[in-house]
Amino acid sequence: MSDVKFYYGDNVPLEMHKVRIIQKLNLVPIERRLAAITEAGNNTFLLKNRDVFLDMLTDSGVNAMSDKQLAAMMEADDSYAGSETFTKLESKIEEIFSKKFFLPAHQGRACENILAQSFVKPGSVVPMNYHFTTSKSHIVLNGGFVEEVLIDEGLNINSEYPFKGNIDIEKLKAVIKKYGADKIAFIRLEAGTNLIGGQPFSLENMREVRKVCDDFQLTVVLDASLLADNLYFIKTREESCQNMSIREITRAMSDLADIIYFSARKLGCARGGGICTDNEQLYLKIRELVPLYEGFLTYGGMSVREMEAITVGLDETMDEDMINQGPQFIAYMTQELQKRGVPVVTPPGGLGCHLNAMAFVEHIPQNRYPAGALASAVFVASGVRGMERGTMSEQRDEHGNEPLSNMELLRLAMPRRVFTLSQVKYAVDRIGWLYENRQLIDGLTFVEEPKILRFFFGKLAQVTDWQTKLAAKFRADFGESL
Ligand SMILES: Cc1ncc(COP(=O)(O)O)c(C=O)c1O
Image: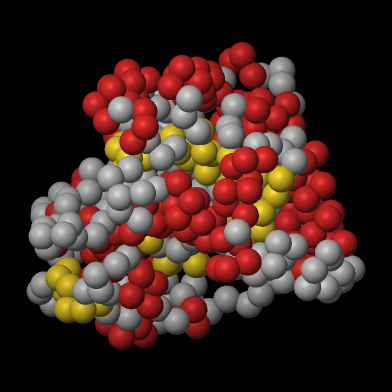
């Protein structure tokens, strides 16, 4: 894909696939978008898809599947125990990750629940490059806490640093020294670090983390949900890996982890998840929770059809032409927005294009949820649905205090192979317009605030009537256009 040069020099990402099944989209008028976001309590999770034009909420479970995946789903062996479909998936896991033991689960957070229940006790610490919402919640629910040991550059929104998801080795050692190795449940390394803008870590960094963990006999857990993007970035940004195949990089990473878990809603472009390890003792420790929470050991809450699709999807993840589509579209969108002055996270990561709400709407204080307000404004302006990744996505501490997020991001996820370049251009156009009219955007306040994972179903109201003014300006500038 990246090797294709354009004669006139205007290089754009070129898809190495063709589209053979399509789904009709609706772009409803701005008046309906305004009503829809109000009905949804300004929470993009609560929008009805019939009101959404480009659904960039997430890449979870919504990536386009291949013809081979769909074909495999027709041949699934539907049995509760001992299904041939499970054996195929287990063998594929062993082939790719070289891990003998595989435990299926219905999605990524189910793996996190099982791992947290198995290893986290009251007072346990889990150092990690950066937290993810569900991974942190499960650790906290089991009485533990998270220590982030990300390199400082990771929180620098605009940077040239290619591996902003790296662990700071000195910070990691300091945390081990502070609490003592016996208090550490495990070290969690998240590939394609979600909440800092889909940023990767390097293979070299993982090797250094492994060395420290060997010195202190600590378990390394790799969250491989966003592994595909991380693999692409290692291949294209890490000089010492340029001659390695994607399979070889995967294997090298896998050899450095004791346990790997993943959401197959992301990795493998289907719907499911799983945990694998080569260590029989660890396997036996976590195994018994699978039938309790997920289902029997040969399906773990997944449908056999999805398991077939994951087997093929994992194999396709080893193809560079397949995994580069997401990062290249994201890089394109990021660069086009930069040309219009829109503040974005750089370098472009995986998963999606991330708008820096702290700079986009710098007049909105963090306790008025700038990234949430921007998500709402982007939807009104364009019908594009993004996801707040900032203070709204945090949760209050035990005293009811609201921690302010390190970053206020609006994530515009790029489900793999779903959108065309002209749709990306449309999103860029409307976001550019919104940036020029950013002074019209104001904050939000909670009117319904759940205690746990409030961003999923909390409801908010605008602090002033800014959305009506935004819609009026849209009509003035775009006339009758949708
Ligand atoms: C890095 C990471 N880990 C874990 C999860 C949880 O996976 P799931 O949504 O399948 O529960 C996600 C989901 O977005 C994720 O991005």
